[in-house]
Length: 450
Image 1 (tube, rainbow, N blue to C red):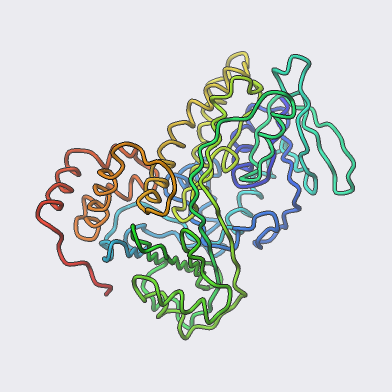
Image 2: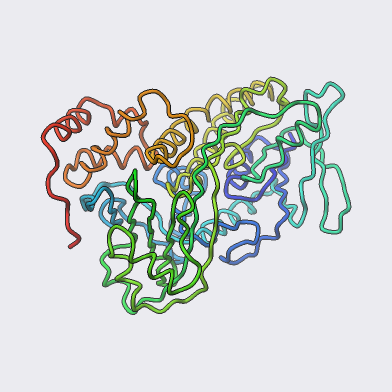
């Protein structure tokens, strides 16, 4: 089987890894020429900002690439406890600090991508076609299958790359809907929720990073009025990577003085106090994210039977919740399971496609519900709310507050938001009872930062 993966994103690299055991050849096509160093790529505009792999995604990375965590640590990454070493300020209080046993790996996006790309390139049946743009699909006469991907080189020369299976991992800018429509197959239904998020990120050198006593700090917004947030990560090179963000066009500025004022305006001044006298080691980088977008390819009746879509090309979420890379990893895990289940039988690509989209549906729904549910708590989100969303939002408001004082609630919250347990965990009787008790009796005093 000849596979073409469109996009050398983390999703594309994981798709290639998931298919190495079943494919004769895998061509990874990307218009960029990724460097063999940990620097941000031109075609990944969000790459300079804070990124995190949630615990569920980290589990997949370790299963796909044994030993990758050790390699990352040797290159400057930090493996930490998600509750002990990551400080969270939310709903006017600090979450409990305790050992929860859930690992987080902290580094810049370019370093993580570099290590994944190097590992994938070691497989003999994987070939990189960089500096080349995917330009469309060539279908069979019945328009049931894609027979080749149209490629355009940097010089503009067009060629056809034959394929038995195509995986689109080209991100939010995916042209697959347009290419399907151009072939008379229609476009997938799309769910969209506009949030207009803006980021500004700057790096700082600290005189003594170990004196902070933490590896990451997040100061989050609070519906319905507080739209600003900040995330500081200690990354390789002992630098503090600080991303400031704002929802609904409350964009942070791109000048240093404005950056400091925005940091000071967060609900807690802890991050501002760290950078107030620190030395900037970079320019300020900005990024805009307009909307959550979910392309429902599984509902498109004329979808070519050998086409899969993965990562942001399938569904992209508000990046402030840090789900993107982990969702891509879990989709890659589903793809790998589909491979293992078909390896010993005649390969039926249509059945393979059905199993993949059915398997990824639950992952997408859970991540979408968590991310959009949080944003819909803001009245500025101009979209029709699902029935009962007000009750659910109040439930989660109480639950988030409980994470400041109740270890059992904190553990459940971390397991779900780190994508290791299903969302139903948060409605288990032992958790719901705690939420109800808080709603009736009120809250304890918020934790103070030690």
